[in-house]
Length: 137
Image 1: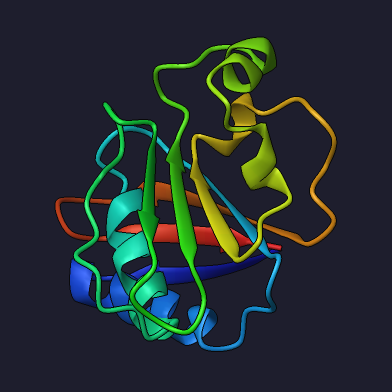
Image 2: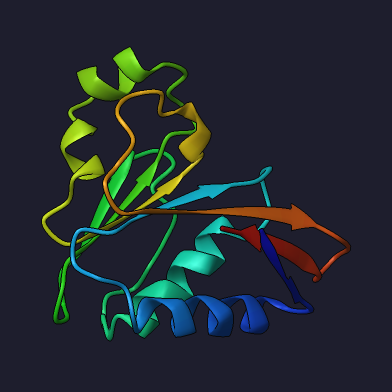
């Protein structure tokens, strides 16, 4: 386990952008952390690293946002309102755990289905008003 300490939202974005640049097609990025920990900020950076031009915003109420203005589509899922794998499957989100592009899943710990073949997990923790600890495999 490694840890990156971010001192600002801009540092969180820059860290994620550096990861996005090298992600293989079919990757799943699993994000965990409490509300306000910076998960969506992380996705903004990831999208920038993937050279996507779409405006990234939280899919909490939509469950899924698809960003396709770039070399590879990014599927951004938010499982906050879904409590079980059955609800995730019923919502039609199961296919994004084996994506035709790259998926990033907020509240990843709620997925109890088959482990994606190419998954990287990140846990974001609030340190203070702007600081975050990002632990990852």
